[in-house]
Length: 190
Image 1 (cartoon, helix red, strand yellow):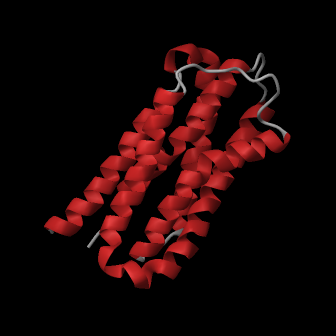
Image 2 (cartoon, one colour; image 1 turned 90 degrees about the horizontal axis):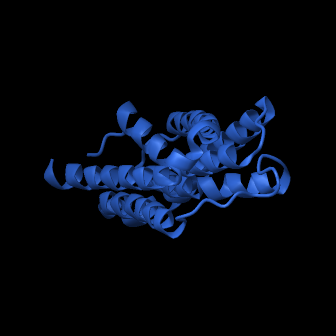
């Protein structure tokens, strides 16, 4: 059966954090001056939502687990692949970075960005619930890694934003598809 070990969780976390990293890069690139508050607000908000969404998804996944128990590996593969493909598609849709006129680390905009960058984590939580795997420690790891990637993204966006751009999303998408494929193959072959 599938084993969510620490390395898998770190790779899943890194894949999920790429949306947040991409937004953070854009923020760092677009803001004229960056203060500690920008780092803290963006990192804590993105990290918190990335922590919460898998928990919410897990609850939903546990409710449907009895119905799809025999197909859980396929559900994990499909959900992770859909999220990965969505991230890759978004990369090709957003070829240019648009700078915002208002500070995205404040108010409603921060909440909207936090939710938008963490929706993918909801699907991962559903996967954990369907597969009957523990979620609290993975959710904490997902949140922490997202917060760290976000802080790094703001910094790198300020320093190298025009070079890195949105490529982080495509990398995250491939991570998630690879992990979904690994789950499927482990179940089918072993």
